[in-house]
Image (cartoon, rainbow, N blue to C red; front, side):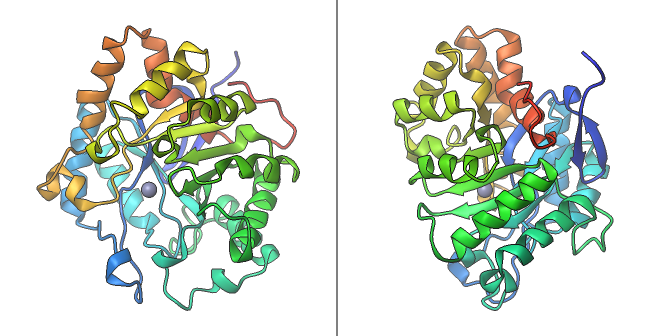
Length: 319
Ligand SMILES: [Zn+2]
């Protein structure tokens, strides 16, 4: 094998092979814009607390966070870069469009054409993000998908397809508990974006093993993130899904995630279980399942790391 391919982080390139332990769907900073209703406000911008939490994660072997807040919805890549530099945890940023409730009511994305939205996504991926003045680039394209390919969601999905075709970047989807997630695969493959470039998040909230097997066999990456959320009963949903997919030889299609958008989930905000839940609880439980170390490393870092590397259109995925 030749040199390790590179991941574009907020502090520069990172060889994918160096990712040992990653939160595949993370939130390291959210400062909501004006006009967001109180119910949709996620405030996560106490820099000292976040810095302390990331330092703990780094000390426990944590290497990468895949930040999932796109521009205009509370992202600040300058803060992400400061946090990364201060703690040594590498962070990728995302462009794209989340659900509308996270934006100012007058945000241009909600009346943008697919061409204009695609140009913005490509600019943030290849030139630089808006708030950084073009100095920090995004690595992924996020789309908030509630289950219906219609209206402005359809426009933004078209834009994501165009931007992924141009750049080879991974598209990550917020799904509403996996609602109608199966419709995304034909939509994108029809537009020249292979399933291997699609990362379907929150799908373990729809614990349909047959569906998960089909999505994985088609090539998609599945983000599982309810491990630390008892209300979703992960012992009866996420863990059995993970075990079954690994047993079926499809463990290369799962990314383990914490998705700590709520400050109350952070230890250094006085809550829990915190980022250390990944090394302290999830990894030991994967070991207790008897999984080989290489499989555990893939589930908790390698799988997402390889997907974060952009793929030239038409290039074979080596997963
Ligand atoms: Zn999230």
